[in-house]
Length: 583
View (cartoon, one colour):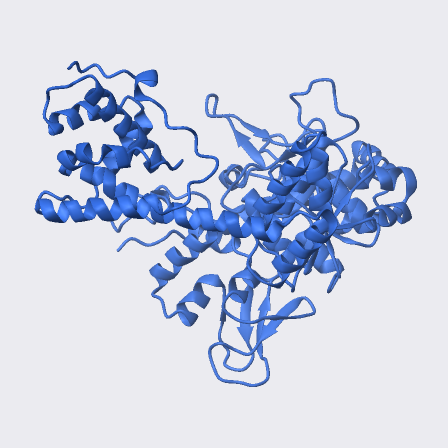
């Protein structure tokens, strides 16, 4: 049996928020930087089971069991190791590729640098970047720039800020210098970690970062897994040069599972009452200087994994984005993600900063007190949602109210049923007078009946080829079945085609008419739907009486469902695709 590579195991376990993962199976309570519970592996009344997120493992002081996510599945769910790995990958949304397995015994292996070697390479590069900031002439200018932006030496040290000079930091092997960070033997690990770039065409190597402040990106155990480089000074005229340049995704670094500042905020604040979600590393530094915990996503949209990671630091998450269009769009995206995780145990709030400022510019221009003051101007989840929907809705009535109502209903239906959803609905109804609860009930009724109806429509389509004579016989009733789903659209097209052939006075048998209608199904998506229908149980062995019973059952069921108001009028097959077959 093939084995998973150690690199894949390490990457998989690093992608999991251990608190969230174990918390789905065990009721955890925060205890300082750790989380505790009664041990799931032995009976006890006093909690001795601890999850230590910044170290990435759990430990029970009572029975001695400890490990990481995979070992927990092995012990708790009684799974073999291979099954535990696959289960964890499914839960984390990590795809397993052929390259994630070790080569079979006797096969030739081309294994890359180990996780340990890559971590060493990243740490060595980080130390060099820090040294460049402290001892070079360019470093003095960079320090002056950091001070001008309000970043204190203490926070800069906590963040391990460094410098990649314009000519490079001396990372690459150089025969004329013994001060190079990497030698030929360690260069593959530097390339695999992303700090060094290897040209496929020339085979030459380059330092990824030049003329940039370097912000090391650390995992929850404090290990450097990547870097983020910010251009020194203002943005140049060449827009192709990014303001921030991040390490590409590697075995150690996946953007959707990583928040910049998570380790630092956890180290600086034992139990922060709130965690601010920001847009970049400089903003995180500004908020940390101001005495508040903060994180930021790295060159990617804020994801559900990011949100769960933020909730592992504090149960109150405040989204603080710029007041420009991009910031408002990011805030709404965050609200949609938060809606799926709302509960009485967590709180989501929003802070839209005054244009044109972000936390970093507020710190630079006004100081920490102003940053704290602006970040205290928060909206509740419901207040932000209502404000946003009103701002993007059409100006004139009745379209304005209809747009706001539709947005509220769509968001409310994504929330878990429970106390928070009920309180949100009540808040919205009190503020707007819109009957959100009744609209949600109607929407759910249509969704449920539509789903059931589609099952009967699929049965009708299956009978289409199996009992064409019944289809012709019941054509009037079939034309009244009108649903917007792919199944309903396919049935509409087929019945329209049959009606057209019938009106043309086709002398063919019912079966030949059905075959002609199928032949004329020019819409690829409808044709695909028909093929899907044919994959359902065949009726060739079912007698005609049974087919009649099935047809009657399906027709009666579909006619009893309410027709959604948004269903378009039935399209005449002659107006869209006149059949090639002639009478």
